[in-house]
Length: 414
Image (cartoon, rainbow, N blue to C red; front, side, top):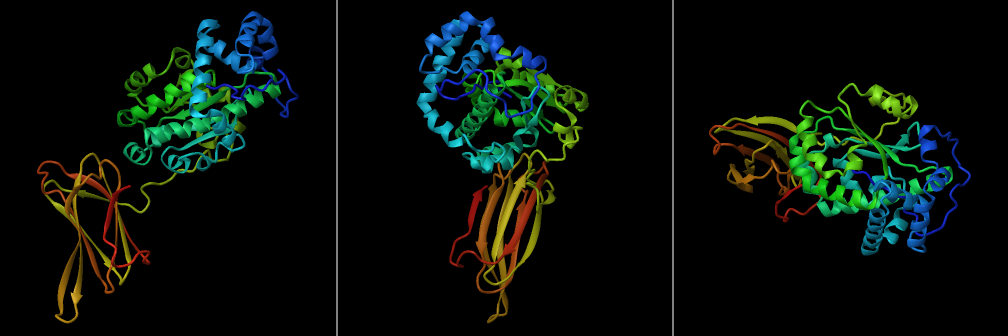
């Protein structure tokens, strides 16, 4: 949600207005953000910025974004742009920008850690265009599974992903700005259906760091953020998020509940708005990964246990995944088969009894069966909890072997 964004075209001097490749007709937004008009209106300020950043940041669109962000207080604008130039140098930003310049921002797997992030954070960075000719971004933070996300993506990985993604988007915004002669920003649709306090308490470190980087170094990147499907308890969520946003970003946030269609259509034409949000565009904004696919739901009673038995063929690979809500669960796994010589059952311990942290993230395990058939017996134990039942999701699968029978069982958090 953080505001930000400059053209990020390096120090190349580009003409203020180029022939646009798009059939774009400026409305009030275009008139208010016309660079020729802005340069005439703020001629003295532009002259100071041009002289100060000559050979380092000559792009008038970038200079304007910083002046606009700090209400044309040149001392503040200059200080923050200097800090951004230093930050870019410290992270090797020119190389980062070059590496992502030609990428489609919707192909998230092309960005660092993007393949994993798109699985747990559904988003479409450039879905369509709004009525002002600004690109529309769609994201659904309410679909994030907080613990799973944190188990797969570190704060540092998320920051690296966002820096690369915003570098790509900012260069695109810069190019469009020069084509049209207008300061181009982004309109964001942020669908928070399903968002809870658990999201914020779990993801707060990631959120805080991402917003800090964006707001400090990518100023005036956003035209507006339309937050939809705000739940009744959103006031509590907003009380946590709002202090993370600077004043200029707060003023660009529009919050609506489930009756959001009219608000979206005020800024986005029906053919540019997804059908799922009341528009006519049939293109799906993003792929929604079903993280519950193949899982079975069970409830383990307080003080009780639940067993699941699976037939396992000779040499087959046994795989399991366990997820629990809020609390841990006990688990042990055994393999039972017949001893043909003694005609009696033989029991082998696959996983000794232990309390697994399946409420923190999905716990997965694998084991390869010996060269004889049998049954895998999973016992989910809640005997140590006399007053609290446990809701669990379990997926157990067998497949052709991909490891040798001598390999030990492997149990890892996902």
